[in-house]
Length: 132
Image (tube, rainbow, N blue to C red; front, side, top):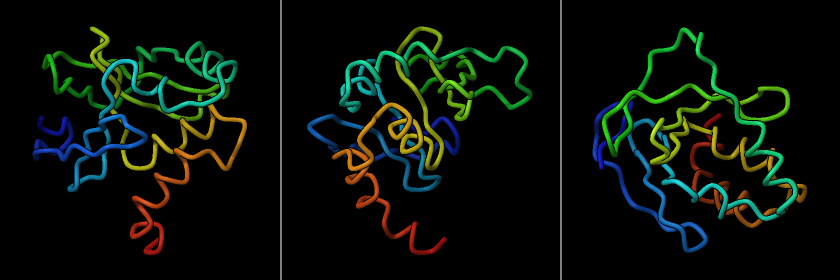
């Protein structure tokens, strides 16, 4: 599958037995439909996070194309404070996360800041965190 941002081939990585598509060039991550829900641990917080997703029809950012169906994706705010903006396929094929956004969304949807997934993401991208 090609990255919707830089059009490079993405790597398939396994995170908690869930396959994610990762772009080594721009550090973006694609999750197929339902995979974000599997990464979030707390059921109540997960539902609150999913319910918080709101399409921003007036966002000036360029619309990206879904790597599955090639249709333009929606810009969607995630979180009660609209703190993270992601790209979501209108046909529900999945969600695109720019560099660091998946970690932010998982932190929003997890009460436990020692969440296994957050720790795995930090381990996977430790080389980048050291350079910041």
